[in-house]
Amino acid sequence: MKKQWNAEEKLQYERALLAQGVKYIAGVDEVGRGPLAGPVVCSAVIMPLDEADLIVGVDDSKKLSEKKREELAEKIKEKALCYTIIEIDEKTIDEINILEATKLGMKKAIETLAITPDVVLTDGNMTIDIAHRQHSVIHGDALSYSIGSASIIAKVYRDKLMDEFAKQYPQYAFEKNKGYGTAVHIQGIKEHGLCPIHRRTFTKKF
Image (cartoon, rainbow, N blue to C red):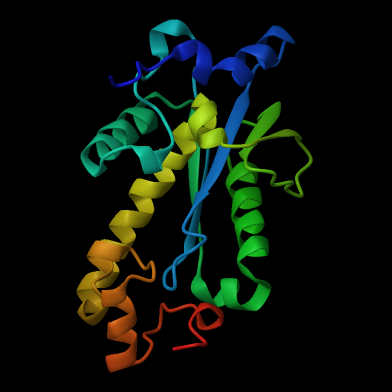
């Protein structure tokens, strides 16, 4: 039986903070740390947290179908008090490494929000160089409504970006693998070499 979406579970971190008198809580997450090509995309979002404004179904973007993610991303962007989406390109990833590139993307996403958050919730055990109070939540994209919302809009944005790159570089099937190292993608590299959006530090062995 499919597990019901549970607001109590998804909002445990947010409600604990609201009980302390916190007003604006930002969730931040990234998509695309592992691919061989394309940017890492980071999103930060401040969602309204009243019962009437909750979007049922928000979860870790990896657990949702593409259609469901796209539907939820539109609702999240409509409802959000504010949100940002930041791309950190493959050249920067190669220069500073993927962990630092991810932290930079998250920092930029938080610092460019239209509303200054009182607290930032980050996925995993990531500490970002920001002036805001922050909490890391392991599996945050599944356990926090705010982080889950950020993960969905980042994922939908990056997938669409990779679909566009697929038109420019059809030999790698980016529309199917989104830049991840599938057999078809690796075969494409072996036959055609690297294209401009490949991460050189991720593709040395090819």
